[in-house]
Image (cartoon, rainbow, N blue to C red; front, side, top):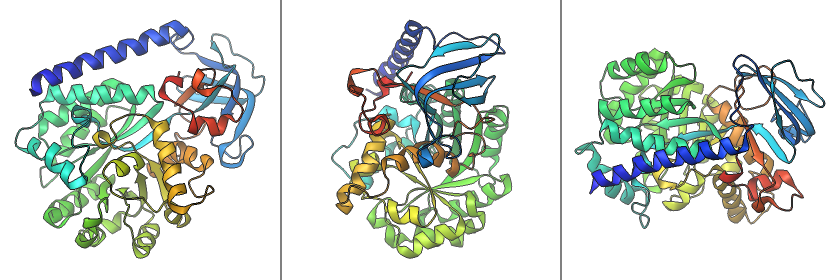
Length: 428
């Protein structure tokens, strides 16, 4: 049954991309390109720069009825009544919100192929029923490519311009299909590779072929700090150190993992020496001591609220982690999210903490969750000097949100509505 299923997925990928192209073609402004020049988004209803030094509203950096000038692949200027240099394409921004692209800080893009699997089980049951057999019956290169392209099409539609894709140890053909699809999607991405060679030769080969030639790509090393993976953790740590890249791990996603002491395993493997290059996903069941340890290391945390809800994993201690000064980004987490809806992910991040604290002012607030989805995500990747805000000189990873759609009407409080009313259909 698997082959027909993949055929359907390939058809969906083509269909989704065709619909997206047709939508962009109909709007006109989104598809016109002038090689070597740029774009002026004129008179946007609201620009969220995510730069507190560029606009009002604290961390959001808000400007009303403002312009954004993009030249080449960089942000040239943000302000009011900007002049249009010769040759730039002018886009009417009236009724629009302009902001940095979203950063998906932890995902498993191939898992679009197993959406809807084990929706009545927790993490361990889901792993057993949905992924365990793939180690002995691996996904082919073509299937991996199809699944990842399907996911990237969804990410682009929801406004994600940077994704961190934690791959799986399903063999070289799978890895090649995965990273080829990421490359072809033209997203900015970090590829977290779970290698199989103890000396990292397979990771080095993928880096040389796919990552190094691509200015939109970076590499991470993936592993899982559990007792049965202790050797792999030590090897992966050594590889990450040698390559000077981040070590990306799942930490304390399920309550049963507390007894496994994943931070102790990481410490024994020498991973604490990575400092800021220790990159943790989920981190739900952190103790006070764990939070202090990660803060002391300068490590970062990726938060997956929708996935954590679906798997009954628990609620991350967002306010405590944020108060400790730990960098936090949001992630969609692949098949246990079942969607690529970043707006829904932001709503879940806000709602979970409010429900837990019985406090409508609990972190993340609306402003904090928007920052986590943009600048915060960039900070977890140590890419805040390149992306995450509309600061002149940064890369032009920019999205435009149409507030004139029915789900936004009436537009009374656009910042709050961006989180609570926004949908992928609003992204232009």
